[in-house]
Image (cartoon, rainbow, N blue to C red; front, side, top):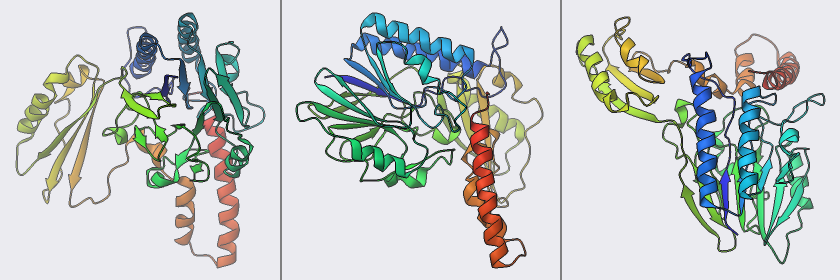
Length: 376
């Protein structure tokens, strides 16, 4: 059995303010195009199975273009005779009873084996038994699902699930329905564990791997390895399988040290020159040290920005210890964790604080779940 493991494709994700000629968000369009190119490259590799470990879509109510892109790629996989095994992740799994999971549409194909109903399913393909545990409503539901697993004695056993391995809990994304996957879930009895949710390619257990996302979705992922994994569960062999994605690069740091702003502007343009015309996402840091922070002249990099998908300029200064929160990084705020800290600064007795915290946390959970299901 040869399988390719991908995850977190987030079809429908839009970022930045650049548009195509027809008015579509350019970042969203590039994600669609790169996904299509990635599927073609996977088909050329001729795996026995393609495994998607969750978050096919960026939202539980995908845009029409996200649907049509996924369905077109599914047609290509069917024509190539490559079955798709997939689960729902926290982005494309409903959080309320009145919402239908978008994978229900994808799963109408006979070549698709999808788990999206908050329960464990298993699928036999060739010499491999796939054990599918989608994103769940509650953390304890994962253990309940794993307890139902009966590994096959005559097959390779592959677990596909979505969540944050406890060994990397410091890398939590603080998104809705982000649950921790503990060692009693990521059992060594499986021949391979295909994980989704964390966007960097990483091994987190003897046989447990994140393929990472295909794309760099935020600048916080700039150092992460992207792509997919080519896996032989029987031999327990895993190797990276690069896929097509949009460039995201760090141009390093410029030490200001009294330099003129014209000189700094020229330096940024010089460092970015090799990425022009590639719709790249670039990040550069201006380190002012103990100097007062100065702003770049208005419009100084306008032409450069036109040739890039995005240019993020970070500022570092001893006067400002806390980094400025960027719009694209707002999802990283741990709202549930910050609320109790906020209450600690309010003058109220302990009993009242406990009651407000309990009510506030429940309200936040409800609002976050509703927000997760809004169409972008």
